[in-house]
Image (cartoon, rainbow, N blue to C red; front, side, top):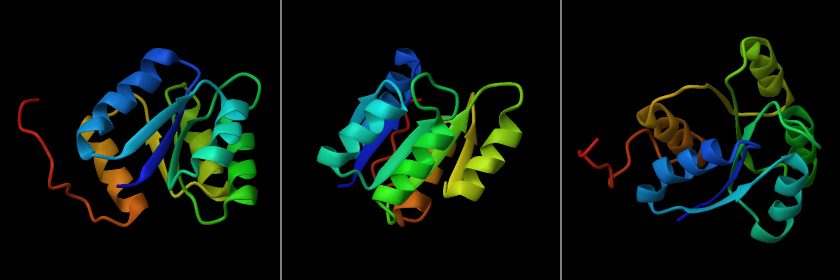
Length: 131
């Protein structure tokens, strides 16, 4: 079981990502912004951080840089739903995000990227068919 930190300033979005990933058996915690995410990563030691790009206090790009500096081996996925997200997400990838995710996204795409980031292939054995 891996540890996943979801960083998003929109509580509903953070909870949605957590709910999508919960059946996979990973331990998941939420952070409301980049500064909180960095603080939590110091004690939680996540294997993967999934961070929004546009957030108050510390945006996703700053968060990626800080997480990469503190935890060089941590996998990072960047996500955004803004109109200019493609540009910012490509910058996130250059700064160290392994993958980028454009909101809105399908559960299957999220799980595929999480599995790839964690080195588990692209299919989880605990997939459910009730969706």
